[in-house]
Length: 315
Image (cartoon, rainbow, N blue to C red; front, side, top):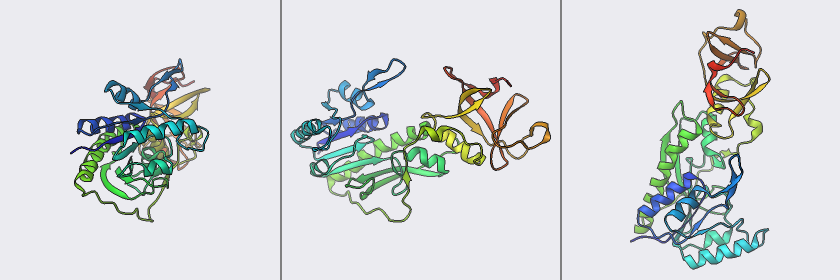
């Protein structure tokens, strides 16, 4: 037996889950995704990954700008409600959709709305769980399938799938593995929903953290911070928005850095103040606030491509 599964999602993380649900034999009568957005240097309108996959496989797509019936986009919301009601889904699966679901959406499907969240709740509720986990130095994350309620990632936990965070993971590499886990976890959860064995439990009150959306202001490296914290942030902000620093009057993106250890040679044999960059045998180092150095491994000049930091000039 298969379920009628409406789907709401936007990025590749969601598109792979949609593909897995389709491959598992579920009927997908409706797909919700964000409106097309300008992207790239030409700022041409581009469809989301979910829309591209849905259109390619003949699934109906709706792109409301909002879902509040009394909000700015009330007309869009009314149309979306009519579309969802006509689809008569057993369940709505949500993965990085980008819109808050009002009560009428949460209450419409027979089995409610299930969210694929990229952390082990209640740790890292919110918009940037993958990046914040790396930035904080967590060694484990995972996927939570959650029964959605009116709160922000506060609903009952239906299932979890843990995943280790590797010491060299950036947001892109970790998200790639979480995407595969998320697709497998939602298929497994719906299989349990079909046979009536899917059971939830409330999130514990202790251990809850919030993953704030990344800001451009955070991307500017503050060399007064400890070297290990800066190195983690560099990985967490790869590929978006990318950490940056100023060298020789140029703003550079820093894509990879390393902790070289206590034997790092200081320039002129003296410890520099935080933020000073120096070169030693073709390698670039920066002094951090905890008296440790950080080696610059991969950088990017404005308008250029990623390159080894050894290619930087001294002036």
